[in-house]
Amino acid sequence: MVFSERELIDWLTARAPRGPEVALGIGHDAAVVRSPAGDGLVLKSDQTHEGVHFLRGEQPWGKVGRKALARVLSDIGAVGGRPVAALCSLALPADVAMADVRALFDGMLALAAAHGVSLVGGDLARAPSGVAIDVAGLGFLDGRAPMRRDGAQAGDLLVVTGPLGGSRASHHLEFEPRWRAGVALAASGVVTSCIDLSDGLARDLHQLTTASGVGARVDAAALPLRPLGAQGGATVAQALHDGEDFELLFTVAPHAFDRLARVPALAELTPAVIGAITPGPGVRLRAADGREEALPRGGFEHRFGAPDDR
Amino acid sequence: MVFSERELIDWLTARAPRGPEVALGIGHDAAVVRSPAGDGLVLKSDQTHEGVHFLRGEQPWGKVGRKALARVLSDIGAVGGRPVAALCSLALPADVAMADVRALFDGMLALAAAHGVSLVGGDLARAPSGVAIDVAGLGFLDGRAPMRRDGAQAGDLLVVTGPLGGSRASHHLEFEPRWRAGVALAASGVVTSCIDLSDGLARDLHQLTTASGVGARVDAAALPLRPLGAQGGATVAQALHDGEDFELLFTVAPHAFDRLARVPALAELTPAVIGAITPGPGVRLRAADGREEALPRGGFEHRFGAPDDR
Image (cartoon, chains in turn yellow, green):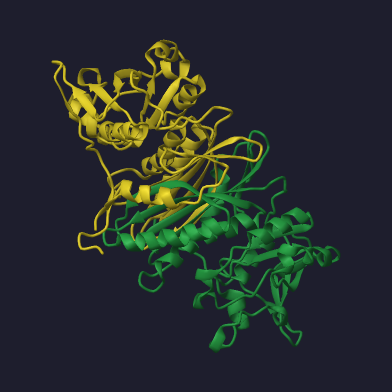
């Protein structure tokens, strides 16, 4: 039996013990746990594996280490958390030089310092084959209600915080995690749902609409396409289906958007209204000529298990 | 250049950004971060890799999953934390059956439920080769000061919470994490240092004495040797050098120990005084006949880098 990431997560969600201090559990970009005094604690871990998320020799070690942490800061921001601390678990095969390990950590620590994040611990082990990095992050909500994936309402605008597509050229190694925008969105109190774009707009939008029990319409002409230098810009297909944009996708009622767009942490980015939430079901793409068609999930999903699996 | 886990940790400790909310950073069993309202948050991640920490087919998947979480609960307890929530990052190669993945999680979730720990999230990915598990845990100090590795004083008793040695037979897969004892030890306010025994008594004791700037004397005759069924019991050498006992090793002034030993969470275990802290330097082993010799670090340490490394 071949099973998808989503199927395993659904199975886990039904079984995982969940105490009263859990405000947001499995199924959101990050979890939220209440401390005894009531502080909202945001928790997330993210893996970066050689051979899956990076190839040795193709990406500089410093950028690999940076990305491993940046992914977690992006997830923490997507629920409105201010990242504070991180743990790094690192498994190293025998043939990785100390200079490369230092470069990896230099990249990670520089990003941590730039974002006010303390590296407080983790775990080192020998890896049987490829380098494995897992970063766990802690953030604080500072009194904000966490943003969720399941609150989008028909009629809401669909907004992204920046350009999409063509991330593989370099953006996936150099992106700035949008947690400051996430904090501002959560603080506004008017954002109805939010998700960070890691698996491709179409796929992540399906996650959001499915969780919210709504549909959506994406306007192809409104998609902000990433400039890619001499290569021109990303195509609409890339903007829809490439992963690792690490922008935030959020929903907000039209009457609340104008004021929200003037909030500094958002105004300094290039937010774009790319469509709207519909009663659904389904996600549709409206072409420049006004014709609409279904927008399939597409994007990237890990699949597990062998075809001859029991 | 071949480099040790300790050398890399020292290098990291000097460079890692550390904000004012960090009460305990790199170099202890777990980190402690203060929440905005002042709650003590305990954080720790621990890796379990196929081919390093377990062999597929030799250990049941349920016990592998159980152990991956139990190691984290042990670390959280060693600083006095009550474990509350966990994240699991899991990387799966193509040839792992869904039934085995479920068994892994069943073992982990059963331990979580038994200890009041919520599984709140994590990350799933395809692994290039072996199964990689990284569990990150959150605990609360509930007003207790965290126990540290660096507070042992000459004259303190050296105490372990249970039997040592021969863990490989089965104990390493079935141990009960001693966080309830850790909570009681921290709450007592009289424990001067604590560490969980994962890398072997001799090695972990060296960590504690080095951090505290003291020495220690271990009485061989006082070591509680693990019964191993038909195989008899663990040897003194095993008690000193086998890893994965996952008992707590702590130090306390002699006058404070009698009362401490009557605290229920400790009295229900079989704590044993195995020696004393000395002015040092160095750790010495006293044989049953009274003769003393130096006790080398021994035990297990990951080493990284190739001999021809730059």
